[in-house]
Amino acid sequence: MNKLNYKKTFMLGFGFFAISITWSVYNAFMPKLLSNFITSSAMIGFVMTIDNYFALFMQPAIGIYSDKVRTKWGRRIPFLMIGMPLAAVFNLLIPNYGGLITLILFLVCMNISMSIFRTPVITLMPDLTVKEHRSKANSIINFMGGIGALTAYLVGSKLWGISFKMPFYLSGTLILISFIILFLCIKEKRDVICYEEAEEKVDIKKGLKETLRNSRVFYMLFAICAWFIGYNGIETFFTLYGERHLGVEVNTASFALAFISLSFLIFALPAGVIGTKLGKKKTILAGITGMIICFLALTFIKSLLFIYILFIAVGMCWALININSYPMLAEMAPDGYLGTYTGLYYLFSSLANILSPPLLGLILDKIGYKYMFGYGFVFFIIALIMIGLIKEKEPENLSLAT
Image 1 (cartoon, rainbow, N blue to C red):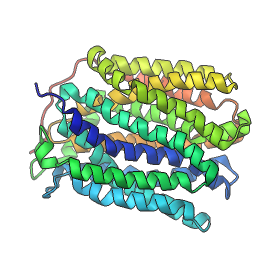
Image 2 (tube, helix red, strand yellow):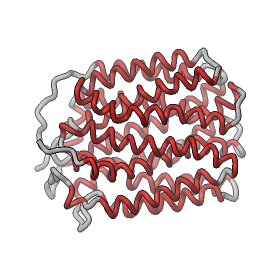
Image 3 (cartoon, helix red, strand yellow):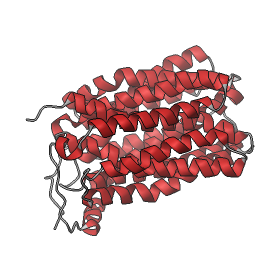
Image 4 (cartoon, rainbow, N blue to C red):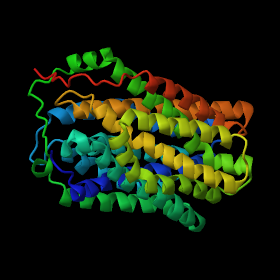
């Protein structure tokens, strides 16, 4: 059995670090910028999802294309070379908007840039790692992602107090630094352990058709969609929840989210070990159950101290789910289709990101912010049912290349 290359996996983690800090800054502070122009929570939620309409089509297409493309840098790295520098530039431009139109323009361009490299950089993890170690490898890159989110919430919340522009400058600069580290340290053709050679003529239609017929993949993708709907909506509106329901400042509310990130960061590596020892499905089920309990409790709590405590538990449960979900789906992928399945992973998570903010915003406009966490509770119940329907036994991993 090939050993896990911890150094290369850690370097690869800078890709997820860049993704995580960008989305954390985006979700924590963009609703506040939009609220300067838009009063409706539902409309803010809709604007927050415009980027995901691009991601909905781009990420699966790029995942499929990255399985087939051949360059001197490899299959995935060229997408990083385009997407990461562009994402850095548009992060720097966002806070320099001249009005609502330019703000949305920079917002959309930044997210298109993120869509260019997000699927390829995540696909590099199973490319560089044998199946037995993918939960551990995913825990390492998610650990790096946790550092990114924690940086956004802790440092970003402090920088917001100085200037609303500073958190976006922080994320843009760190994306660029992360790209330089990745480009210098990861040489795809040299480092990939099992370079799953898709044939020149990959039958994508056949591959996707077989995927949709596979009940295990079907339930897994809908579980992914459900828990991202539940989590993304809460994360998107929590700063406004803090301001309008808890009566605290925006930076105080964003600081509370740091407890989730810190807990996720601490528990990321143990979650990978637990997934390896206990099994991915059982570990994910435990995480979902914990999220259901936490969201139910948060519905009735206004004390920041107890919210901090429960957010620590939320971060632990979210780690159990996130660390093991992508490796579980990747194991279902036929040889040569890792990029395609990664694209499907982000197709369903992007679909969740499209549906959740406007849906929750509409609900909040109707009933107020008091029962916001009940929304997450419902969708994690759905996720629990979906994962429970997945059969334990894994079928043979058949190649669909022709």
